Structure formats: structure tokens, C-alpha cells
Length: 112
Length: 115
Image (cartoon, rainbow over all chains, first blue to last red; front, side, top):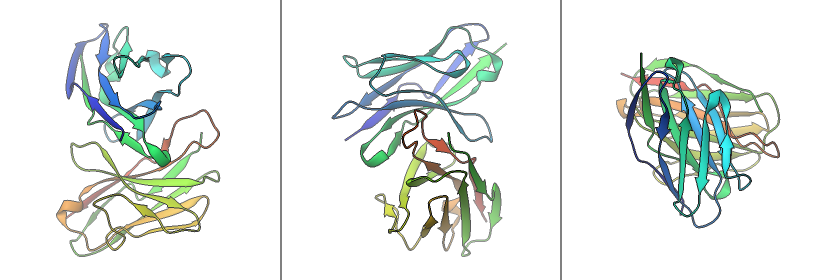
């Protein structure tokens, strides 16, 4: 069975500093992995996805994630945080039959 | 990627009543999904809706409580029946990306409050 664990429920950074949101997954086969962002009172927006191509995936708004099979991780990073990055971030693994399994979410706060 | 129109965006309902949520997609899609996001929680899949067949429900969700219709390849509804305050959540629909290289697209959600 597939599962995903987001290691931090809250992350707080200063504007202009790097962002690291951690995600570990469990899958019995090569998974598809996604990061989604949810701004307050907004819908879900896809940041990036991994589907067994390049292990370093570049997404929108300067975010990227690296798939590390040996560590079963798919951490999300950004070199320099912006105030507009404050939101809830979800790491997602695709289970069987197109089912998406969401992590618990990480709330990112960005301080001036 | 597909564009999804979901409505209503929010509603406040009396307990014991029912609410039907609609999702309209701008292109034909094979599979549509319904999720629930309880306050402060992550998303949980309720069911998968395929056109021309019964929806497939996840553990903990039943058709009597969450009946789903999928009359064609661009539209689906989810009804929350006999509501109680515990049903207060955000409900979202989603579609599979098909052959596109994009990820799953989500509707903007329906924020339901049951009083």
C-alpha cells in the first residue's frame, strides 16, 4: 500500500531564506509523486510532479523537488522564500487506480 | 489541463437536510474524484466516479450518505445527505490528467457548514 508522511506540520522561515518541506513516501512500486499548494480559501494548485523521469523536478514559482529512491523521500525546496509562498503544502502519492493519497500537510509561514 | 467549475463555493445548511455539489469540466474526462477536507485536515478520497457505472466508495464512505451521479464525461454531482455538524468540511472534485503531462486538477472546493 502507498502512504506519504510529511515530517513537519509547520515550517517558519524568513523572507529571502531557503525553504525545505520534507516528505517521505512508501510504495510497493515506482510511484508518481506530487506537491500541491493550497492558499487560504483557494483551491489546490499543482506545484510539480515526478513520474519516473528526471529525479530533480522543477516546478512553478521557483520550487523544485528531488526524488531519492534510496531514502524514499521527495522533499520540496526553494532557494529564497517570498511572502506569497505562505500557504499549506501537500505531498501526494498516486496509489493504484489513479487514487491520490495526501500527506497531512505542512503549513509554511514566511516572516518579513 | 482541464478546467473545473465547482458550485456552490460555500453554503450553510441545517442539520438533517441535503446538499448537492456540482462539478463541470471543460473537457471529457474518464475519471472524476470526490474528496473531503475536514477542518484543519488533509484531503481524503470519498469516491471515484466513472461515467456509466456506479461510483466506487472508499472505506468509511457509503452511497446512502454520499450519493454520486456521473451522467456524462464532463459532469458529476456529490450529494451530502441527512447532514450533521460533523459533515462540515470542504468538498472538492478532481479529474485525472488522462494522457496529458499535467497533474490532477481540482475544483475550487465547496465549503459546507452544517448548523
